[in-house]
Image (cartoon, rainbow, N blue to C red; front, top):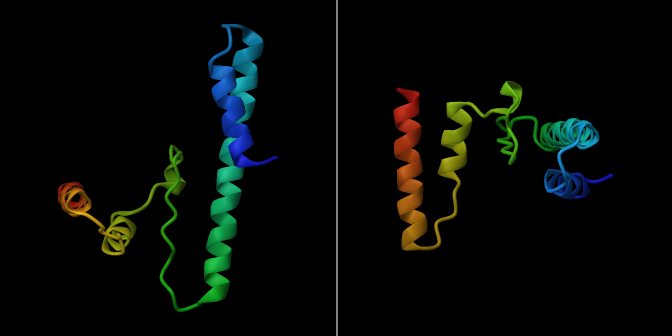
Length: 107
């Protein structure tokens, strides 16, 4: 079972008819997706710890971060923004806007 497969099944279920079975299926798929995301984040952080003990905590941002334990801190967001690759004028403007919003949230 892979995360992309589960996400594809979620999309398919969302397009299905209204029924109690489809609601149940959707709920189970969401639980499975959350568990796969949690495990992937845990494995990633364990690999990061083992590869470099002195390195700061890795920033793991996922498409689905409804769990408060997975939401990054302001410091992690700041570190992530500091390592953003800027390839165009539009990217530069977007990075500047993100840093502005980060400052607003932090204060």
